[in-house]
Amino acid sequence: MSVKLAVIGVGNRTGKYLRYFSLHPDAVELAAVVEPDPVRREACRKQFSLPEDRCFSSSDAFFESFREPCDGVIIGSPDRFHHTQALKSIERGWHILLEKPVAQSYGQCVEIAGAARHRGVKVGVCYVLRFMSLYRKVKELLESGAIGRVTGVSHQEFVGIDRMLHTFVRGYWNRAETTAPSFVSKCCHDVDMLLWTTGAKIKDVQSAGSLAWYRPENAPEGSTDRCIDCPVERDCSYSAVDMYLRRGVWTRNFTVPEGKTLTEVLEEQMRTGRFGRCAFRCDNDVADRQLVTLTAADGILLTIEMNALTRREGRETVFAGTRGEMVVAGQVIEVRDRTGSLIQVQDFSQEASLPYHANADLLLVEDFIGAVAAPDRLPAVTLEDSLESHRICFLAG
Ligand SMILES: NC(=O)c1ccc[n+]([C@@H]2O[C@H](COP(=O)([O-])OP(=O)(O)OC[C@H]3O[C@@H](n4cnc5c(N)ncnc54)[C@H](O)[C@@H]3O)[C@@H](O)[C@H]2O)c1
Image (cartoon, protein in one colour):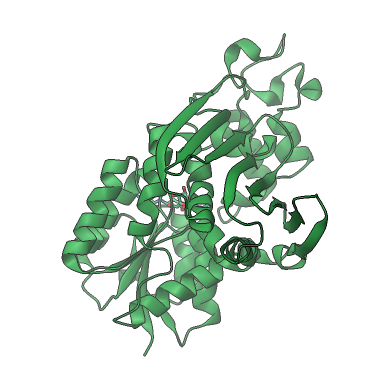
């Protein structure tokens, strides 16, 4: 029998999860969709041939009036709605697949977990790294003693300038109050991955970070509020015109209403939208660089750097151990002994080129559906599992 799930917020993330619904109609059925954007809602309605009365423009209307059979929900709305929508779903007894960060404070995360426990509802968290073969292998190698006991970890996450601009400077994750601090948004699943792979129990969190670069005082001389009419735009590495119109990066995230073209949507953004603003004159307040040091109970240090000041992108982790060391750079794992001799290489580059986060997004949904269908099974990453990484990230701020 197929599982019936409703989807709250049909954007970039849930659009990917819905791919699983299309591929496996025998396993999962879309019970309802909640999406305020009429273009996205209509596209989803058409794609799944949903009747109008199962399509909602607000979650309030959905929770008040939806009475059809439903086993669970996928919550992929903006962060600030997760807490209320999760609590309301729990009240209805619906299992939840919840996007990260699961809420806007650690207290809210704990509240959702408590309510779910009380109501007997399963909550899975979209910590996609845990579903990637690369990190599953890292965990397996560490647990098998490939480098002995872990003595220290250094992890770097390079956000990349384009992602920083699109998401954390001009975009919707640019203010802690309306979303979360950037370290929480960007690194909560990195912290989770480090705790999960090493088993470290953290007793102290130190953090330093700020918004140092994307500030008005660093705007190029002669620049103006909008890149489209800025006289120094051609010489600026942060130009929105260059990014969206010339290079065409990050453009898939814009919704194109019927009767318009993507170019028209982008040009409108350049003239009046948030994405056409000078990168140094936005309303952003989240950090562009943060260094966090975690001290584990046994004294080992785990350092995590979030860096959005370079064009480098991706993650690099160095695990030091009593018998050797392991470097995870991009999609490649290298294990060396204490003399530095290469012991083994595991290359996941081919798998990483697969869509949907190297297929991990689809595995994540499959896992959740399996947990909803089986009374005695929990999702692979429960909300309880994610509490410690959320606690650490909110402490680091
Ligand atoms: N797991 C990951 O790797 C990962 C990556 C990126 C983002 N995220 C998280 O996923 C969530 C969604 O991010 P996204 O990139 O898909 O954003 P998005 O903006 O593409 O999608 C969010 C959707 O929610 C809709 N929405 C707005 N207000 C709503 C409301 N009150 N109720 C229901 N829907 C509403 C928007 O119209 C939009 O379609 C966020 O919490 C984000 O932090 C997770």
